[in-house]
Structures are given as structure tokens and as C-alpha cells.
Amino acid sequence: MTVKTSVKLGFAALLLATAHTQAVDLFYSATGPGYYPWDYVPGWIIYQSGSTPYNQLPTINDDVLINATAPRAEDGHALTVTNGVFAECNRFVAGYQNYPGTAWFRLDGGSLTCASHFVVGRQYPGLATLESGSLYSASNLYVSSQGGVGVMTNNGATVEAGSLFVANNVAPACSVLVQNGGSLNLRSNVIVGEAGQGMAVLNGGSLDITENFYIGNVSGGIGIVTNAGAVITTSSFYVGCQAGAFGRLIHIGGTLAAKGDYLQIGRSNGGIGDCEMNAPFSATIMIIGTGLAPTIPGTGTVTVAENAVGTVKEFLRVNNGDLFMRGGRIHLQNVGNPNRTNLYVRTGEDRRGLIRGWGYIGYTNENITLRMINNGQIIADGEGEERELDLNMIAVVNNDIPVAFTDTNGWYAVNKGCVRFPRTLQTFTPGVTYCWGDLYSKEVPELVNSVGFTFTTSVNAAIRGGFYAADRSDIPAGLPAHLRPIGIWQIGAFVEKVKLTKATFDGVSLTFRYDHTQLRPTDSNLRLYRYDGGAWVQVGSAAPGGDPLISTDAPLAPVSSGDYNIGWFAVMAVEQNGTLISVR
Image (tube, rainbow, N blue to C red; front, side, top):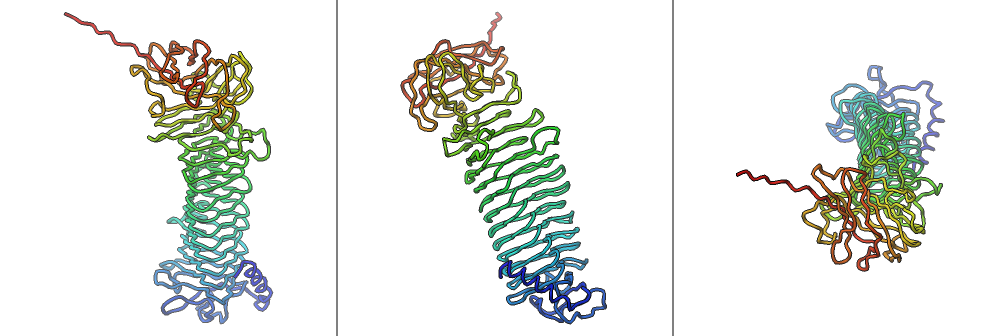
């Protein structure tokens, strides 16, 4: 039966209710094996009446309040609505009074229409199993309401309600929603872990939420949602919403779409959120942690694994937290305002922002201009395998928190990782310094491991390449073994944004902003080497202790071999040799 049919039955029932001048509270009492049918009239008893039979089925005005007496799950008994039964009541509650065991409701075909709430586990344990049919609540659906523990499993029913609450209040144990099939259609919100401990395991079916999906909502709320195969559509997702709340979203199957506004992990006022993505997802705006002061920062952690392709229409902000890339892809579409910043890392001096791992952040349409603010750290971490963190499709990078040469904001590569910098593409005027890995118009590179460059003649090109961990096998052999690597880069000038079609130039001078934290007190000198296609040749030097910059001694001609015509570069540290004193 469809939800629309169920709604019509509910309104029809309201008209028939005029035959009853006063609504009553009912419970169900029966004996014998198996399930107990809703449409068994002798089973319905009026509360606080000395076991007076109701002598009819519940109406749309009556509250149905079942306890673990007759429909007791531990004994295999459930109050059951089956095919051809059109059940109705005002409010339905499983687990109303303190009887030992769990009050069980089962929908196995047919329909149940509630003019008010549907509650599983109010003050005491309740269980609902929805095999098929339809359930309609004109108000809200609660899995655990006022201290009771609730468990609801939907295997194939069509459910419609206002809002769905899983763990609305503190309870002795975690309350659980399991969806293996069917559909949940919410006219308002879904909240898992409102003020208690709630869990949702979504293995199939669909969730269509008109407003928002909250996971770990208010202080004391703990929510965990695992999506292994459901199709979830909502306006916004909020995970870890307020101080004292914790939310976790594990998305490993199915699809997830925040079609209205936000996918936010770690919301305002100290909320803590955690998210693992390993399946397709989409949002208009994706936010990790809370942004600007004076708001108390929320903290977010997001992992994007290899099976995840995330589509973000407007922008992604790592305001206060971590984005761990583990082989996944994030596509930034830049819909709407073409001049906005599409990737923002760290939004305040009292916040922290980190992107770490391997994968891709950009877009497949190379004609879209993507912009980035990097006030934090971007670390390519191969975790022992040669992997890349690719941001080449970002066109503009800058920082808006003042940076000094003692700061550590910038680009890094560890554990066989390589980070592909945002490209710098334009017509370069001879004799003018530009930057790569930093704002192109800066005269000196400021972000750690960014590079300044100056062409000797006019060149129209995209400067592309990356920064490499020193333990990668694709770095040309032959660097002096007695020196310690500080940083290694590969750089080229190309006529296109993606293809490796080389641009021509006469000469280029370069300045490298190396990582000053790699220096040791025993370092006496720094040397800059370039691979000329056959050997590593020293092309510059600097003394440690001043500004962390090292430059080429003279303009360099293009490298004739290999894909990257500006070449490979390495900054190497020279350590002082100890003095041997012999006493005779």
C-alpha cells in the first residue's frame, strides 16, 4: 500500500471517529503461541478499567500503549498488522510501562495510520519490525523517547512521518534503527543521537528527508550512522552539532546527497564530528569544523577513501580539523559565483587545518577556474607506497593569515608521497618574479616548499609539477650520498593544463622556500642541485640561519630530456665533520 493511500485512510478514519464521544487508552492482552493479530477484537483492553474489554478495534482517537505482557519479544510474541488490515490509532507506544521484557510491534503487510506519534521504547524497552506494508505518522517517529531503549528494523515497509528521532533522551543502552529495505520519508528532520546514544545501520532502501539529517545533536547526544547501501537524500547533513555532542557518519555504500546546503562535520559551539567516505556523495557546500572567531570551534575529521567520489558544487572548507585523503576524489564544480574560493584550509589563527594523504582534489573540466586559500598544511603521505596528492587543476592559491619564515604553513611530502601543486598559468613577463605553490604575484615565495621563478624572455605557459618525498624511486639516482635531502621538486613549463606538451623558453631563474624545520645545528651549508638529464649538477648554494630561501646562481636553460623541462631540483644539507683529537 502506498503512503498516499495510508493518508487517505487516516482522514477517512477521522470522519468515522465521530461515533466515539471520548478517546481511550488501550493495551493489548492475549495468550497462546505466535504473533497476535491487531484485528483480534477481544485482545483490546481499556487502561485503568479493571481489564474492561473495549469490544472494538482502536480508532483514530485512541492511544495504543503496549507493554511487554502479551506482545513480548522474548517469548516470540508481537502485536501484528497483516495484509488487508488497515490499523489506526492516535498515538502508538511500545514500551509504555515497566513490565519485564521488550514490547514488540510487527508490520507484515497492511497499514498503520497514527494521528500523532509512533514511539518505540518510551519509558521502557520497545521493538518494531516492519516487514512490509505502510506506516504513517501525522507527527513524529521516535526510536527511544523518554528513557526507554528502542530498536526498529525496516525490511521493506513504506514509512512516512514528520521527524525521526533515534535516542531522543538518555537511556540505559544505545537505541538502534536498522533499514534493510523499504523507504523512510520524513517531512522534517532525522536526528540520530539527540540527547542519548543512537545508532542507525542503513543497508538498503531509501531515506528521503525534506529538511536536515543531524547526527549527535545536543550535549550528551552520541550518534553513529553507517550507510552500507541506502539512497539518502536530505537538505543538509550536520555531524557533531554542539558542545558535548559527538557524531560519526560512515558512508561505505549506496549514495548520499545533501541537495540543499551543507555537509558539515563538526558544527558550531564545540561539536565534534567524524566522517568516513568510501562511496559516492554530494553536497552544495562541505565544511569540516567551525570557521571564524568568536564562535567556539567545532572540530571535524573526514576520511575520503578510494571508492569515494565527492561532488561539491560551491566550496570545501577545512575550517578546523583534518581531511584525510586515502585514494578518493573530490570534485569542486564552482557553481554560482565564479570568483569564490573553492578550497579553504584553516580559517583563523586559533584554528587548525590539514589535508593529508593521496588522491585528487579538483575538477574534470579544465576550463573552470578553481581558487584555494592555504593557511594550513597540505601533506602528501603515500603511507609506504608511491602515491600522489593531486591539486594541479586548482588555478590560484593564496593565504589570508599573515605568514612569516618561521611558520610551517605550506606543502609537504612523506612516506613516498608526492603533492602536485596548483598550476600557475599565464603569460610571464621577462625579468618579473612569479610564484608556484603560492600566490603567483608574490615577489618571494612564503609558503613552505613553494617556488619563485623568473623567465629571461616572455613565456606563455602553465608551470606544473610537484614536491616529492625523498624516498621515492622515481627521483633520478646520483644525489651525493654524504649530503642530507631537505626538499626535492620536479618542475615543467607546459602549453596546456593537463597534457605534457612542453612550452619553449630560453632561461629561468628559481628560488626555493625550503622547509627550515629540516635543518640541524650541525648544518654548515646548503646546496641546490639540478638534474640535467645525465647527472645532478650544483646550481646554487646558501648558508643556513637566515631566510629559508635558496636560489640558482644563474638562469638555467631547458632540460632536453624527460617530461619536465625546467627539471628536477634538490636542496641538500652539508653537515659539519667532527674534529678528531689524538692524544699521545
